[in-house]
Image (tube, rainbow, N blue to C red; front, side):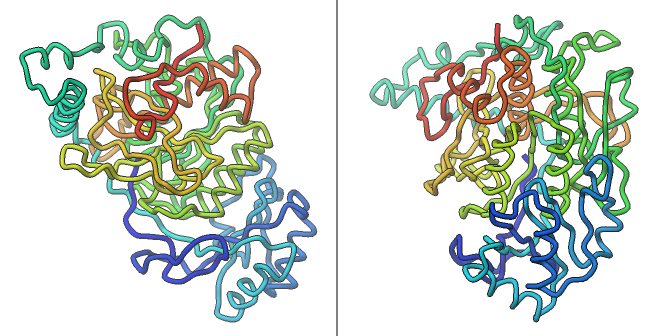
Length: 452
């Protein structure tokens, strides 16, 4: 997960959630959530914006053949409309904001208004196993001692010894999730990875069907960061990587959709992320993987409503639960935005011993704030961007970011196997997960498992 500092909002712009922190960076624009009675109705939504907010220049995603807005044109419009998910991003001024906020609860076409935020990456892609290994080792020992009445006997090292290791054939994560023995390939399933883009010249993906679009101003879909390429490799990497690398990818025959919603510096605005979701739904992706978020307790009504509408449209949004825990120090963290939405699947991380990762967060007590499932997230080997600031063909990193595309890729395998989409696909993932001897507040249903 790419973590972002700051909270949503210096003020309160929606009747849906509590007061927001002053530590945030508003863009000066606002995200409007339309009610269900105008969902999908471009004319009615545009009319609402014009009559309530006085906007004249409304750019709609439906103005573009593939549903992917031109982000440069969007910056010049008074409002950008995403009719499929029923939201709009509106340029703000004091009078317009006053009219929009007054409409919440007073106009049956408007459900919520939230400030758009710029979110900043704090991830450290080069921070590898050393710090995390020490943390999850300590956590595993603590769990063992608790289960054995506080004993610290000689048996501890045996019980926390590695269950899985990378081999010349497979990463440990593909073994633990039974991808290595699955006969499914993700054939025909559209998987959208909304992240920092992808290395479109990566030699492991030559010949793959990849559709890409940037929703970051003045940046192409090419990944100059590395995070997006790593996540794409985990969800959708090749069955037999050229050059003799071990297999690290899951749905090697899926249809890859790369939505660059975070910049090469690892930051992105809500508007770009929502544009990516609209684009993915327009292209009938069954799975959206989002290894991004913000350390915010409160549910953002924008992402909750968008998640609901995605499920209804046959698309499951899967998001990183967060990396804000420091379990070895007694800090269990909490699930942040957007994963704390009830309609978005929140993914935590385990290590090769199937212990909870030191950084992986505990369920947030807000409605929908639970960890739903976990995936491999410590010392994960996958593809990397050859044009990033630290170029290389592969990299090994840790985070709930890495666990999330494991779940997304396995979701594609289940969807291929059964045809399930949306809520039914969610149900399959949690019903088939491997139960773990860990608290459900940490691991949800358990470790995601591939169909056999």
